[in-house]
Image (tube, rainbow, N blue to C red):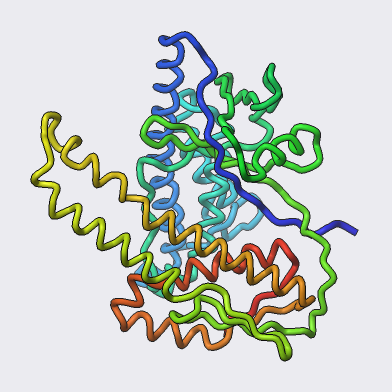
Length: 364
């Protein structure tokens, strides 16, 4: 019997392992060219997939027009000369073959097709608009294209990707990144399709790993009832035991304090010393751009982790988020709650960690 697995993603900083400045500049140029191609290709693929899907809704066409999206080699009523997924891959191959490795195009096409299929019902109902990809989109690739090895000192790792040499930068690494990379190297866990992202000259590896779920002694009939609120981010009750995770002062007030500090800084920017145009004027403000987001993200990770730990300790196999749908509707009408309380982010982190532990999540 196969073990249940889940996909775990780790963001690892890497840099080009080359001392020659000219070669390093060439490698950077290649990455930026690939990123630009991926940006253009993503929007092309999504537009074509949406167009193909919309053909069935063109009710003003004559009845003689066939609009069955199938390969005519396998279905005589089909209008395609290949499979639905392969149509956009052939399009990308015709546009960009020779400019970018075909493995990247294939992985990108597969990912976009799956994303479109998961969203197509919402597109059809008019509940959401078509996705638009930006220029900083990650460069995807399959696991077979990445070669991982130890470096000479044994602290970091070398990565060869499409003949581009990279080296990891793990630093002190208080997380589990070094351990996970070592387990991938010895074959204990499997690397999946991953991606590289270039942000302001820094390169990050978005490494996806297929992790087996941890075996915990859980009782499926034992239900943990959790409630998300402003006063206490998470309140959970299991049988007669009640727990409260986080406080309003710790989360909300701290977040508002960061917002107020940023607002004060915005007012004072006009008095900052210039000398290099807009960049120097906004130098102090850039420090706050990600400060609030990073703080909220770290708090939500901590709260969700403690909730799952409580469920595991109590052997609760089912986690019920009580009255959550009504709370989200109320939050949409309250501008303050909508801006400052991250219901969606917390729920996503709870689902992710619960899946890793084998706990079933039900949203009421």
